[in-house]
Amino acid sequence: MFRPLLTLVRDEEGRVLEKTVTMELEPDGLEAFDARLEPFALSWAMLGARLNESFPGLKAWPWAVVGFQREFRLMGHACSLRKRPTDFSLSSYSISGATDPLRHGVPPLSLVFVRRKEVLEDLAARSLLFDAAWSLLKEAEEKMRWLVLPDNPPEDWVTRTSVGDDALFRQVLGEAQGP
Image 1 (cartoon, rainbow, N blue to C red):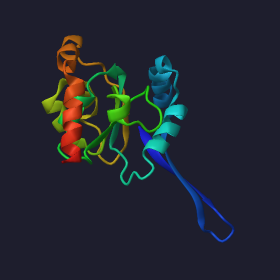
Image 2: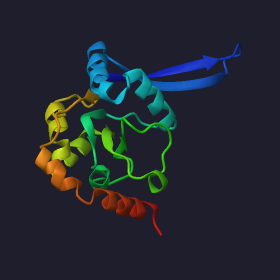
Image 3: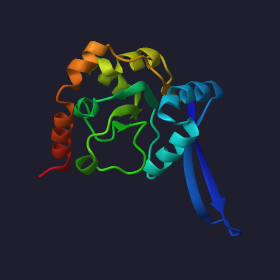
């Protein structure tokens, strides 16, 4: 489980000088996530700082953060499942700072920020990528915020689904940006 943590720095008259929003993890979740991030030379603190830069205007916190065991060439697949831009956001452990997929290439997928429970349920019904995450969270309370570290989907499915994924990503990105 995680909590959004708002930090405000005010001047002597009470005006807000600085506002920072971060995700605070329970101790058990912190240890598990740090272990997941170790192969990428990251910790939750480092990733959290990057996320704070990546999502400065986040209006609504995700219901769940899905952190996969490894990075997948499935960014196009995941994007093609999105019904609305606000349903979920995608990121990668190995990419830091702002990236432009058209200039830097298609990033791998390792993190998904799911806005609402029903979105994850729909994703799991449509893709094996989200099946294990849904199995872990289908009984989870909707009023809480969750960090889930699911098992990987079957490797043969990943191999088949990743074929042509970069082209699919570029196609979906082009459709999202319009003519």
